[in-house]
Image (cartoon, rainbow, N blue to C red; front, side):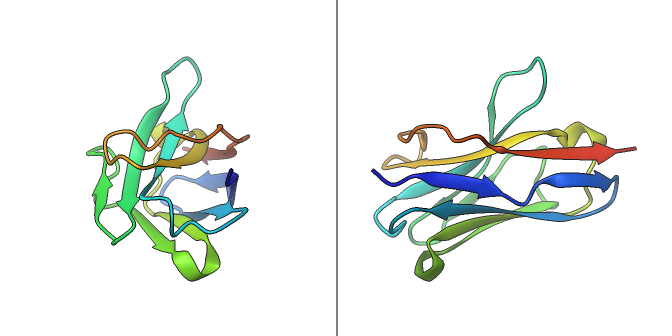
Length: 119
């Protein structure tokens, strides 16, 4: 089974930017939908953005206009460009994927990558 590994997190000031990467151990072209999720302390994991194999995207209202998901099938990597970061974006960010648009969570969860936004 393909494994997905997140990277690119860090500490940034409010208003700053980060780009997260989700690298697959194999080909991601067979994964129909890949999503970025986040979990803040004491909160449930939430879907932030998702992208289909043909490039259709969807972003949560809380990040729309600030975050952009993209995928490079040739590099087997999905990215999350995060701009205009806010303290409320602080969370552990995870990626996952699956065959269905409504449920891109078919793989084992990885360690995630921590994003901390200071005010």
